[in-house]
Length: 350
Image (cartoon, rainbow, N blue to C red):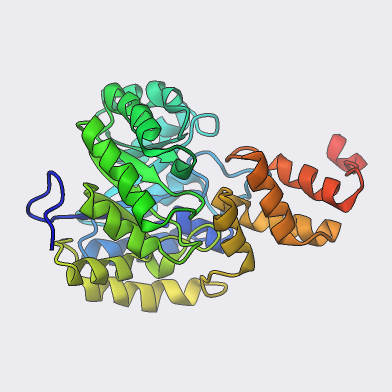
């Protein structure tokens, strides 16, 4: 057993994102009662930060990303009212969320915001980070699609977030494209470059989400994301209850009650799932191609519409280096592969 950098006590903080990233697995249709029940279980288990709201983040409920069953403030209030100790957080993506919507979440009771930017665009996070700090929020930051930058270049972007006042900077494997050595190397580079705490957010497209999280911790990450039953975009996230067990077996102190997590996963979350969270062909190829996890369902729909194999669409999207926010490219690629031009229906032009 090694002693990770700056963490001789081997303490790790598990952050749960069932009620945000996990929303993608249920088409953003958790009710406020569902949110309250899951949040209460996570709180009983000792999870200190619980992320809620639309799966794409604050302000994303729309025809483009899918309408949620409730508003973001309603979800926040439901979670806040259900917990005794946990902080409730929301995800803020510049260009999707607004500071007005973040103020609405503050009014509803959040204590933490997680500001997510593409890994090459840390400067896009400066305004919301500085504003959120002025409001007294804890600010966690996400470098999405972190696999697209080598370790040293990623650390340079992390240093910008650190300079803006971020409390935590996350290496985020949005595509589930990393393997353990790659996850560890990126965290180690950040650890040498910034003073802020470091987090790691894993997707499981290559089946190594838990291993990546363990590698991240051994290299200096102190915050690790998960979701109950692994709910999340595409193949889902590292599974919170499995993370708790694996970290305990590896000699880490997570401060959570494993069996409370298991009970909440088994008796509250599992009955709400439409289908098991698995690594199917689309999820696997998505990770292999390094494509953003939220492209999972739109790519399946485009493949069916145009009669083109899902894997061919994903591989081409990967070759073109698409990122989150470029979902329109799915239709472009599918139509090109089908050898025809997609015509917008008249009703859509009104």
